[in-house]
Image 1 (cartoon, chains in turn brown, blue):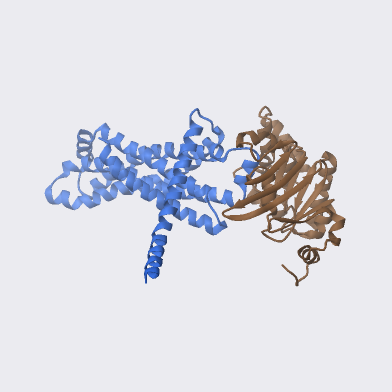
Image 2 (tube, helix red, strand yellow):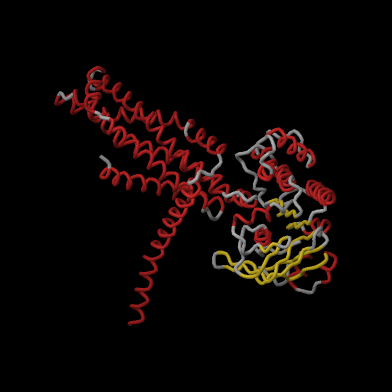
Length: 246
Length: 264
């Protein structure tokens, strides 16, 4: 579904991704973990075509993204739904309009009533029935995440990317969010990529893990194999040890 | 010795060169934005709903502050002139003086600066916050060009609204001048009107309105450029607003100087 080969990206004269190679099969569930500023968010934004790597290739569903001009990326982006770290809810739109926004762009023929109905249905699925007419500023952190998830998933895109879906949330809400993501994933058989600092919760959700440190891959493989990884950075990070190279 | 002199020159070049390069980068960014906005306008490719929303937000909501500013601007002109009007008995010049100054210079300039403070700074802060909270990335991830969707409607709205608000402001300023002239300089309304209508020409109004449209364009470009290029979170947004207001004020004063020479 997605194939990166030797991707390298430099931003503001600072190398962010370094010779990164990664294959994601359709329907697989990946977690990206790593210390802060290791390039996790930049990597997923690169997958969406928001950054253009200086070297390497990126194929999404067989289409090479890195050389595609901006207008030609539309079709590839339609295959992806993304929850941003800061939710990225448009604060000039009401909750239902936010959720319906990608749908309206994908299918301009849909009437306002149809869009509202579809958005309402998706909001009910994420447990936010009755919040349709609210503004994003009226929502709590957990509610914003849910709206972000509703927006990311409303088009039933084959690839779903969640950047910190549970950041700043309490354990109960975190658990509910992961239940929701699992449910959505099961129903639509999507390829899922999730970034989270809540390692235990993320590991329960994903099948495979990519460990990034300073833009380099230190581990790539099944979640169960992470414990056996002998890299000192990975060892320290997943066990939360105070002493080590980090 | 020679090495130390070379180092000193190097430091001097660096000290002078860095701000010059930064200025060139900002000017280049504004010109690039100008080109991208024009590209979206020919043929017109922008969001009408967003344009309508901005026209309301930037124009209708600015009416009270513009009316207040314009009314007292007209008043101030007469207060300043009242001493000499009484001294020389030049009551027949008050209407002309107020109209000429308000239409050609004071109206567009003060309203432009007020518009920059109210609408331009708000626009920069809003766009900057959208950058910081990844809303711009969110639009791009949905293959929506932020320039076409967000910036073009704002640029159009600011030009149109500053133009219309200047017409309103001019009328209110003249009313303010007439009222203050009656109260403070013993100039009757009839005398004010005769002086105004006989000496102020359509060209004076057009002169000011052309300036208003140009000022609106300058406020729009600077506020959008600094908003969309924000870096560094909340501190970056504050810095961008500051830069946008300074750049707009500078742009208004410089273009006013040039337009005053160029226009009839």
